[in-house]
Length: 281
Image (tube, rainbow, N blue to C red):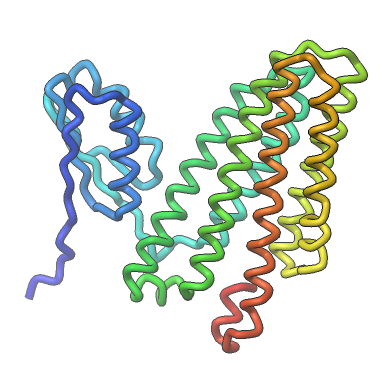
């Protein structure tokens, strides 16, 4: 009896399509869990380098075949061996470094390095979303990973906001490196940005330690920080300065959203049996 798994394959026709649209399609099929993704293009010889780069941005995808009209990539990852907790922790570590370096970009240019790390966050996020999706659709994978749907939903919400915080750190560093501020303006901007970074560190501490009190304190700060941002914007006539403030405000919203994730996690915990409680520890 043949027990080999039948591979799911999808073909993407990329002829005359914009590279950004091709990327969206490839990511969509990757997240859907296809084992083989074939990209066909009548102009593949000229576009192969760009398409190969798109594939290499997805963890576990390896190019198995290429000719003048198509590229075939296969997903070689064993999802059952992947830990969502470890992925979340790795993303958090990367974001912490991005936040610190984006703050320093007001006087030193770290944008390219931060941009590269944001791509790392995206790769890990795509992988995590794929694991979550497959675990929901396939109970066997969920059992192998020892996760339930509540944990998967909680992780999904957390990952969305972590990814957005990484995006904002990248954008903030881009604005910061182009700013030409007076000392007082720089001090004001860095002061409020430092508060948001501290809020991020605190909310992740709350997440790891299941500390609802810290999460509540972080959530309470949101309106005060947004008000401080608005006051700074109103006093400035520098468009780039104001755009930087808007990006900072966006990051604060995502930090506050993570506090909701902690609340959901904390409030769900008492409803779980002892076996499922171990998932959240």
